[in-house]
Image (cartoon, rainbow, N blue to C red; front, side, top):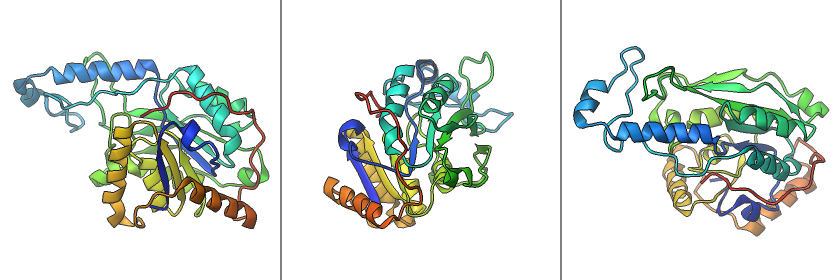
Length: 296
């Protein structure tokens, strides 16, 4: 893997890190977390007979997440508006280029407002839709197939001339499981992260995910020829991410390796000295504040 994944709080493990693209799938709001966990509890109470009867949604062909232990709960804490603001304050001064945050409908306007206060240009949220990905177990209305990408860029000539980008993303049919299925509750498909990395960074750029989870954004960055840097707070999830990245080394990754902190700083200093990043100097922004809890 061309990059590094650290275990611990990003405020500690990535304190000196800078990047060209900040791509994060941070925890969602308490409404989304409680709704998911409530649905998981209901699904996991279903009997084997229920599972046989309710297994397939005839309208979409999607499989219901029913039966014992068929649907995992989210076991990390939700974020509040204050958590979002602290994260943006910490990472804005460290991010040369695009800022992409994946979130729910509750926190999307919070991310947009926090990024707007940094002076960046913030676009209307982009939808990512995964048809048939969820079923509303209560049966009282529509399921939630969408999440939102809040994207913002510096107000500099380079980014004004960046080029047109998609107005949203829909998971294509026919993808293999490795590209289309999230690896953990709340995770995103590798296909989506590869599209984001290709659209919002250039080959050779540094892509950072401070809430790395199972390492999907880092894997996508490496596959697309970027330097991947990330941090994962949960030791258990960190170990799973390492194993996943190692297992994926046969699909285009270099030999999996972990750069030391000094190696990472040497590489970033070299990039700065030779002017290899097309994004120039870091934007001026507010000083980082004390850290907040990140998604395991």
